[in-house]
Amino acid sequence: MQKVMGHISAIIKGLLIIGVSIQTVMGIVWMCCNFSNFPQYGDSLFYMQVSRILRCDEYTGILYPAFLRIAGGNHIVVYGIQLIAAYAAAHRFLGIFLRENKRFLIGGCFAVLTIPMVMQCHLAVLPCSFAASLLLVELSLLGEAIKEEEKRTLKMLAEICLCWLGLALLLPEYLYLGALPVILFGLFCHRGLRENRKKGIYGLLIAAAFLGMISGVNSLTRTEGLYGKIHRTPLMALTQRTAWTSLFLEFESWHEEIKDYIDREEILGSALYADAMEERFFPVMERAAADGLLSGEQVEECYKTMIKTAWVWHKNAILKEMAWDVLGYSAAPAALPMLLQGRGYDSYSNRNYDFFLEYTPGLSKAYMDYGSWWFVTMLPLAAALRMIRLFDSGRPDKKKRAIFVLCCVLTTGFMVLWYTMQGAGMMDYKNTVVVLQLWMAWTMLPIRGFSIQI
Image (cartoon, rainbow, N blue to C red; front, side, top):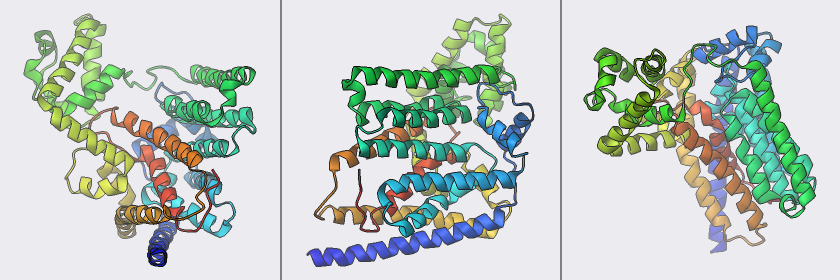
């Protein structure tokens, strides 16, 4: 039986190596062909503009515009640094497991780097590349902390908090998303922070100091509403999440005061595409409150009524849309072909795909098609290989391994939930490419007879 398992394991390993190698080669070729190109995402042009004045609103971090300013706005320099940072982050993460197998470690780094959707972010003037790399480093430090237990506790905490600082200054939502590994560090990694009162106080002071730095830099570099974007509240986000797809259908159920102020054409325009609620509907409602035509309580009551009505009459549709967003954020290559065929609902996938095909359409289509097919193929193969390895003897410390896996799952799960709840029709796989990098790492690790040291 063990001999048969060994043969099956060898076959699966060979298939995984061949599949990953094809992806790596295609990714390197695509990178070389597109390195000088500049996809003009709306956010890319916006960050270029901000880099000239270095003043941000509440939805923009100062770090990426400052980086563009230092790079002179040269997108080739930007791509080069983003790729180097991405390789270094992958090397740090995989190095926890493969430090003794350097050639395979290098191959694993290129596999993580050349996932089509990940490569799209690295060759774009957008902060999502650095955000993914920094979060991967943060998780790497968490893994090293689990491995080393009580050694260098406060130093490791400071390093994780430094990553948190960089993430929060890149994208404002990482004030919360990047804080989770810091919290997990204290909960799971070092009992010393809880048992040693003095060390625990120092740890809290370190975390508080970095939180203070984030707040201080943001207060110095941000001006609320500077670029005319409406300030979104959690209630607005929940309204957009639940009520957008049924916005025009439920117009008649609203309060008469609201219907008198907002005409049907405005509602129809807001229902056409997801961003329109921020651009048209919410600004109209906020202006009504500011002008005294409606009270703040009436506006909030309208939002709550929209949420309640949409949930009562369209709960199944809302849950289905949320499931599509969760799939898109957590396994984008599996969802993309279906979304492009119109089997899901609105998202930013079509726009992202158009940008991906812009300069080398034939190669780009083949690369993305293969990446999507290979993703849904490699995961069952990797799962089968891991099941076979359950019968191996000499397994490493399962408790430490389980803790690290749990930390990765909690961090990425919170990220997927966060972006899912931001609104309907707004799924953008660029926000969670670190999830794809972790999937690839999970696939690569059992290929060789490595020994996990955590």
